[in-house]
Structures are given as structure tokens and as C-alpha cells.
Amino acid sequence: MAYPALYPWLAWKYREGLAERRGLYSAQVAQLGREKPFWIHAVSVGEVQSALPFVSAMRNGGYGGPVLLSTITSTGKTMALQEMDSLIDAHVFYPWDVPRVIDRALDALSPRIYTVMETEIWPNLLLELEKRDIPAYMVNARFSEKSFLRALKNKPFWSRILSTFRRIFARSGEDEARIREMGVDSSRLCRLGDSKVDALMERKKSVDGSKLAPVMGGKGPVFVAGSTHPGEEETVLEAFAVVRRELPESRLVLAPRHPERGGEVLSLAMLQGEACLLSKWAPGWTILVVDRIGILFDFYGRSDAAFVGGSLVRKGGQNLLEPLAWGVPVFHGPHMEDFQDLASLASRAGLSRRIENAGSLASAWIETVGPEFENNTFGQRCEAFLAGIGGASAKTWEEIASDNKKLLWE
Image 1 (cartoon, one colour):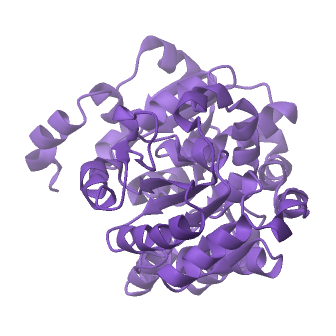
Image 2 (cartoon, rainbow, N blue to C red):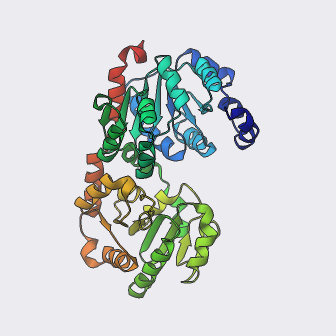
Image 3 (cartoon, helix red, strand yellow):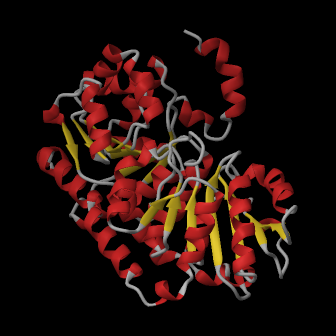
């Protein structure tokens, strides 16, 4: 009902791909629609990265039919075309969830199957897919504690919308339990693991280490504090000051969750030593503040130990998989509600540890570069751990292919 009034603002904000967002497509996409593509929706960069191993599993599994990938963000589109251009047949921007737009989009795209990566739920589209008897799947499904508690306040609505999915493949046991509590029948719910493990292993193969070599030139251990929020940078910097007294040549890479906060974080860092922004780096830095997106994973690969933010403040934590993919010891605060299963598994495997304050973080970082840590099997244990929880992408494709043999190969 609000769409007509909001349209001028929407048209300005989403001017890139405006026609596609309104369900209007090029002749090339319209032709693809006549071939009934397998439609995968990945809202932005993180979801596109999760989609990559899934699409690879589809192709490796023998599916040669058309694949359509949609995103909402421009950065998601850039990532998709960069990483999956040879695997997909077309990219479109996702249609607005307005009934007449959805009808127009589905008439044109005519997907044989619809799959959404993680938890991007647009009710009008899902209800219309159900009405047209087009199977819908949710892959790598996750519900943060905040989203889950909000959804429980309107459980009948969410139960109805989630019932439109033929199957939901949960990322973890915790996510599976939350989705079940929201009213999803157990017969349509399955836990297959985290597709991001597969995505990170694929991404690791393509990392060009030479890009960071000039920036990281120098000696001494390097510690990375990634995806930090306001209130955490102060603790990290206090911990690093303690580390520097013990290890004078050590350096810190500080990457705020939102890179646009780079200037604010730099002001804090400059109170402690030679600090600079990544965009204006200079040799001899002690603290490097990352003000670019998409590069934190590479920095983890050049570090001796890491801290993952969003966990000393109540933000639900961030994913521990990125540093673990490089065999890097990782530490986090007490607030890992959104990644509780993974944090528990990694802790039991001796690969991560909870810290409470600057003192415990400093001690943990110092410990990782001590002589008792130099010749241990940490990297090998990380590889074994990730191998044990990986493979979700291939398993998911096997489940969907088994459900839809006629649709996929007719």
C-alpha cells in the first residue's frame, strides 16, 4: 500500500538496476526465462560467497541447465560477476516485494526452482511461488538471537511464511532449534552444516598473497582484531599496549566492522603509537586501521593470532571461520549468541578461547607467539576441524537434486 508513495525515494536509492527491481528485464534475461532457470538469491557479498560452492556443487553434480543469480546490493553483483561469471547464465537485481512487481517478475523469469541463501525472506514472493507450485528452498539458514526473538512475537505469521519452503537446510543445531520453534515441521527441516566453510576454502585458494606483501613488510608478530564495534576498539588497544611491553616489535591490524568508522578508530589508535589507515599506509606502522571492505580475510592469513569482534559488546559475535581457515588461533568475548554452536565446537577442539577483558586478551595473544606454540599442530588441527564441519554445499545440492529429479533434468 505504501509503494506508490515510496516509489520516488526507492527509484532514487535503487537507481542501479531499477528496471529489474521493478520486474522488467532485458531480452537476454527474458530468453533465459523461457528456459526455466534455477534461481538462486544471494542478497549481498557474504551470501554470494556462500552461493559459490553451492553453484559449483550443482555444476559438478551434472546440472547443465540455466542458473540465474539475483542480489540486492551492487557490491553483491560485483562479487557475483567476479567469482561466478562462468558458472551462472545471468545476474539480475531482486524484484521489490510488491504483488504486481512479483507477478511481472515471475511471469518473465519462470524459475523451475527458487533457492535463497541464508535468511532473506520476502513474503509476497514466497507466497506467489507456493501458489504457482514452484519449489522454494532455504540454504544455510540462520536466525540470529535478535531476529529469532523478534519473530516469536508474531509466530503465526512467520510459521505461515516459512511453510512456503519445501525444505529448509539449517546451518547449525541452534538455528535448527530456533526454526523449529517458529513452527516449521521437522520433516521439512534438516541440518547440513555451514556452507561458509566450503566458501572460505574456495576463497582461500584464490587469495593473492602478493597484494598485501608491501603493506605487511616488516618483522615482529602481527595481531588482527576483526569486525570490531564501538566499545571494543578501546579494549583491543589496551590489550595491544600490554603486548607491546612484552613484544616491542609486535603490530596490530584493527578492522572495524563498518570501515567508514576508520577515521574515528584511527583517532583512538594514534594515542598509542604509529598508526595509519590502510588507504594511506606508510612503512613503519605499528597499528594499521582497515578502511576497506573485502580484505579482512586476507589479513587473517598474514596474522599470528586474532580477535573476532562483536563479542565483547552485545552484537552476537562474528564468524570464527575466517581466521580458523588460515590456521590462526582466535579469541572472542562472551557474546557469541549468533555463533554459539561454532564457538562451542571450536573451543572444545582447542582452537578458540573466550576472553573477558584487555588483560586476558593480551595474555592470550602473547601466549600464541611463545616457544611452546611454535612447533605444535595447531594448523593441522584447524584443517581437520574444518574438514569435519564442511561439505554442506554438496550435501545441500544432493538433497535438492533428489527432491526434483524430473524438474532438473526434464
